[in-house]
Amino acid sequence: MMAAIGGTVVWMFGRGLSIGCGLAWDVPASWKALPRDEQIQRIKVALAQEMLSPSINASGIRNLLSHLENHTAPDWRHLFVTTNWDYLLQREISGLGLKVQPPWLANSHAFHLNGTVENLPNNENRSPFLLVEDGANQRTNTVEANIVFNQMIWHQTFVVVGMSFECDTDKFLLHALSRVEDGLPIGESQWTLVNPDQAVLDLVRARIQAALPRARIECVCATLDTWRDERFPSLLGKGVFSY
Image (cartoon, rainbow, N blue to C red; front, side):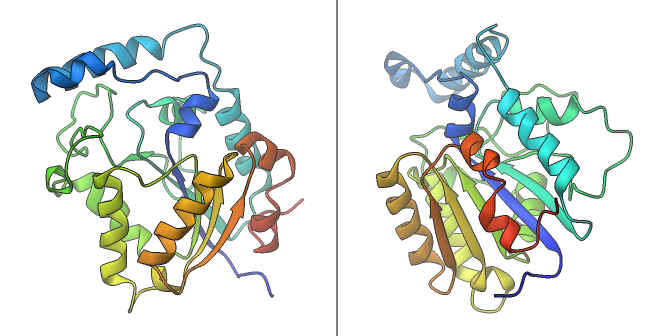
């Protein structure tokens, strides 16, 4: 198979990325009986504090960004999407100190589909904060969500890291992609799923295939760091990287 001539790799990160950095915090079971607004406020405070813990090691994210910066082929770019509430990924991107957007990045913003604990001067365009238990009807149209969705449907190269599409709000994303897959590039997209748990890989593969029947899906049973150390062979075969 010939390598594709340029394009954008859409990286979709789930909780596995945060756990890999040592951020394994989860919502205490006792909080789930609280009113929704109070739950969200407690989560934002607690998770923001956890991100400051000395046990957090985001070197895996830094190494990924370094690899993309140094080895991405001139005609390829990368777009980052996450369902995580934390902003470890955005913090590392910001830490690059970019003055202008480099050619290897499609956007220096990490798009948060389920909201974020990051507190910015202006959050009105950000995705709403969604709890795991929320139904799909809790997802509302926002500038951030619309921008990234409208970009995703025009791309064909996707990498899913540590994400399961388990909760209703994440399943809604696949449903939305399914509704437009007939006439847009997303319908014939190529997906690489990365997770050290084979059972999760099988489940995610089935969910994506059900939503996008014509998509080609490859599973990598490994951590992101291990896959990076192997030089991302499936992406290398598509011409994404040059060494």
